[in-house]
Image 1 (cartoon, rainbow, N blue to C red):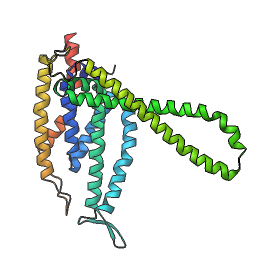
Image 2 (image 1 turned 90 degrees about the vertical axis):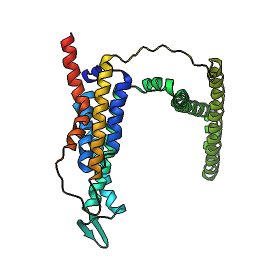
Image 3 (image 1 turned 90 degrees about the horizontal axis):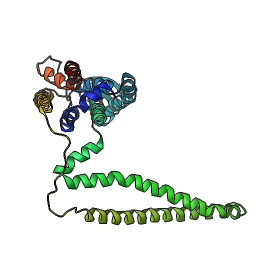
Image 4 (image 1 turned 135 degrees about the vertical axis):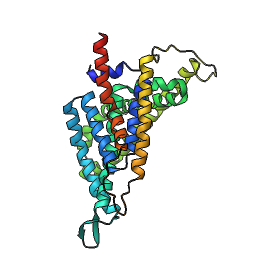
Amino acid sequence: MNPARTSFSRLHSLVTVVLFGCEAVLAAFSFQPFCALITFMAAELCTAQLFDVKHAVKQLIWYAPIIILMAIINPFFSASGSTVLYSFGHTQLYVESLVYGATSGLVLVSTLSWLECLFAVVSPLELLQRSSVRFPGLQLVLSLSMQLMPQLLADLTTSRQIQSANTAAQACDFDLQTHQQRHHLGARKAIMQSVATINAVCMSALEKSMSTFQSIVSRGWGMGVHRSRWNTEILDAYDTVALLVFTLTGVLAAVSLYILVQAWQFYPTMPELQLSFWYVGLVLFAVLPVIFVRVDNVLWEQSV
């Protein structure tokens, strides 16, 4: 296992979700060019640590066109600003609109990167298990929804295979007909096959839903009685300290981000860059996963 993932595996899953969840939320609200750049660079650094440098570079290659595309498209939909970069006809390209589009692209890709880091250390199954205590109804809906799509795709494939096997014998007669007859019958046949496929898939889904409902009821779901459960993960002292550190630095980063975003404006003119203490709070929390892995490795080596 990757050493970085090993460090996070020693943490309680709740602590890990709090850390990366806060990182993703802060990245989604970083509508300030330098804050968005900080969160994006930190997300790429964490990606390289959880996966490898090759994966981070490949991810950067995929994300770069998205950022460039959003930066180019935004001036055509939001022609606002005061600094004209280029003018052609009655259309003017403003620097402010270009920077706003690039910032939106950075916010999007950095949020996706942090979510990828989250699911790299905490599986969706663990998230469902944790949500089942406080939100059992939501956990049931999500688990059934995740199971539904693979079942529908499997039923669709099976139905198409059965139809292909049933109509294979008609291919010879179909080839003997004229071109106009083949075209007419081919279109009609395709429509009838599509209707039959959809009908078969829907009937299979309804049948499986009834079977699932009966299975859930037979297991006592919705009886209104609180059921005990065995919990193998308990918040120990190490998890508590880590959660406290993550929470405090997250609050500091949220306050810093709020102040920096409020002090910035894209339109009509952008202010000059001024170094501020609040950038320190944002940078500290952004690179906190990397710092935690280093500290955890040192503590683990000392304990061994």
